[in-house]
Each structure stands twice: as structure tokens, then as C-alpha cells.
Length: 404
Image 1 (cartoon, one colour):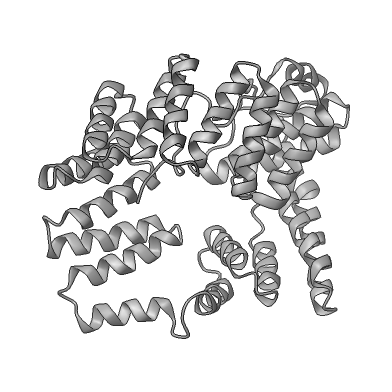
Image 2 (image 1 turned 30 degrees about the vertical axis):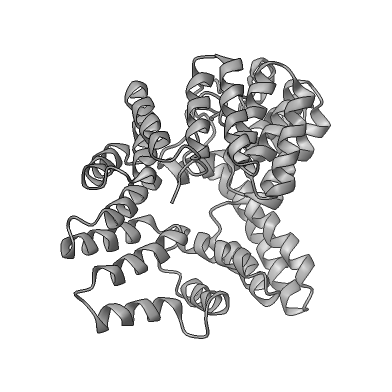
């Protein structure tokens, strides 16, 4: 869930970023590169991270940090950073090479891409070879490439519900909910007993605000598979949107009764606790989620929000730091909230730096500048009036609730 933000007009020229945040990021990058040459890898990681915090569009910083992770055999972290470097600069040849090197180490001795390409070359009329490549792209969050492969597979086997389902999930990940609805409907028409297809159709409908239709599909999911835990999570989300808190809790409890390890249900239950001002219960639930999955970024962010709402600002800052420095450096709302706290404390330099990070990430994600600004003589009072909203409050998750 996005933060509640006040709307202002941008009054500071973009060139200020170049002299303030961007140059600072490049200076950190130079320091980090020097530390790598000295084999001081842990210190280099810190400097690369600081460079990213100063300028989230600095592809070289992601590449450098990824290279250190690769040397330290932290392969998943390395792959994430190389992918981010490529997202920023698709022509970054060295990053492509390093990403391929990382995949080789993660997978088998043979290059995983080449193995799938060769399978297509050897059997070009087999739709499943394209699906295999599509699934591999999908795991790398390259949804456009994945969708392209699923479509090629469907050209060879137009009525295959398995292929159609994967294409629908690709559309969901791209936020193309109308397309996802269409393909999941076709899937359920071909195989009416496909529980995952009914469930994901419900997600696509819910995303479009078609609640009654979503409920019908959730009920069909449970008719086919009464143990489909996540169906109750979505029922809980619907109740939460209607502010029926006790009903939402009952749905989340049912989900966890079926599957005690359903972290989405526990996370959503924490949101209800927070909305009921049962803050200690909400904190405990989110902590449990993080014990099970330390990378569950929304839970960490919401801990920060709870401390923020209850005016425990040092603790809130601690958790926003964890989000931006250890879990997801591109989590824009954490930068915005942290800017609020810096502003309230009168540290306008750091507030502005965080706001610039927020602005960069928002533009990177949406292609648009945020319709807000940091203006020293006005923003403090406006931040004081703003209470951050819990991530996930009033809407469902785009990633965690999908079933593959």
C-alpha cells in the first residue's frame, strides 16, 4: 500500500540532484572500487550500498556489489544485483556476462540458458521446450521474455491449460489484469477442475475491483480443493477492505489452520491487529513472519510503520534502515517515511536525500515524477500531519498471493 502523501509542485531543479546525490554516489563508487582492489570486500559492500542509497540509478554500483557477492559465493544476491544493473542499463555487457556466470554457478555446470535454447533447437515443434525457457525467464523476473515464450508454446498447442496458466501468471506479474482474466477464464473452460486457475482468476478479478466475481471463483477453488489455504487469505482481504475486522481474522485463522506456514495469512492478520491498535500483537506477528522469511520486506516495513504511528521514531528509523539497507534498497516508501522522521528532527539534508531516493525509485518504477516535493520551510509541518499507511492495508499483494 502506498503511503498517504500530500501533493505539491516540484520547485527544485533536477540539476541539484546531480551535484548532491548523484555525485555523492559516484564518489562512494570510486571508494568501493578501490576497496575491492585492496581485497577489503566487506568494506566494499558497505560503500557500494551507500552509493546505491545516494543514487539508485547507478548501474555500476549494483554491478560492483554483485561482483563482490559473486566472489563471496552469495550467488542469489549477486544475480539480483546484476539483474538490477541490466534493468537500469540494458546494454551493460559486463553485467550480462557476470549474470550468466552467476547462473552457471547456481545451476548445473552447463549454462542454463544454453541448455534450454538447445532443447528448442533440437525439438522446435515441442511446446514444452518453450514453456521450460519461459519458466526460467519467469524465475528471473523477466516477465516480458517469459510471456513471449508462453505465447510461442501456445501457437504449437493452443488448448493446453498448463501453458495457458503460465501465460496468465505472467500477465498477473506484469499488472495486465484484464489479459490475465481472459486467459484464466479460457483455462477454466478447458479444465474446470484446475484449482490454481480458478484461484488466479479470482486474483485477477479482485485486482480489477470485481469482488462478487472474485468470490465466486474463490468458492469454486475451495469446491475443487477444500485445503486451498490462500483462498481464505483473499477472503480475508475482501473482509479487510470492507473493514470487517473480526471476519477477516476468522479467514486468516482458517488459512493458518490449513497451513500453519502460510506467511501471507499471518502477515495480513498483523495488519488487522495494527488497524485495531493491537500494536504489540501486530509487532509479534510480523516478527514471526520475519523469523520464517527474513526477506519478507512488507513485514519489516510494517514494523517500521507501527513504531512510526506510535511515535517510537528511533525504532521506526531502525526498521526503515533494515528495509533499505538489508532487504530491498528499492523500497521507495521506506525512504519517504524516513524522510518524514528526518524532517521532524530538523535534519533537512538527510530528509532531502531520502526524498530524492524516493523520487528516483518512483520514476524508475512508474516512468513519472512523483507529484510531491521537499520544500524546507513547508514540508516539516506537512510531514507532521501525515501518518504512514501499512503496506498491504486495503488491498491484496501482487506477488505473495499468487500460486504457481
